[in-house]
Image (cartoon, rainbow, N blue to C red; front, side, top):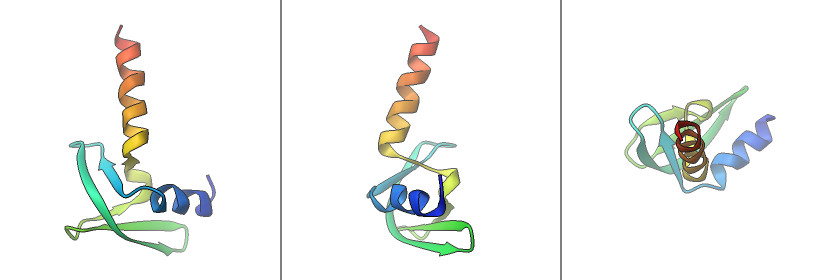
Length: 70
C-alpha cells in the first residue's frame, strides 16, 4: 500500500483494533509525518497505522484463523 491508501484505510474506519490485546479504539485524528502515519485515539493513545487493524480487517483475520484451526 502506498501512503495515500494507508491513510484512507484508517480515515474510512471510525475504529481501530490493537491486536496485542484486541482493544478497540475510536480514531480521533490522523497525522502523516514523512512515511509514518500516526493515529491518535479519543483516549490519547497514539498508534502507528501498521500496528493496528480496522474492525473489518480484524474480523477477517479471526475468520481466517478459525478456518485454519478446523
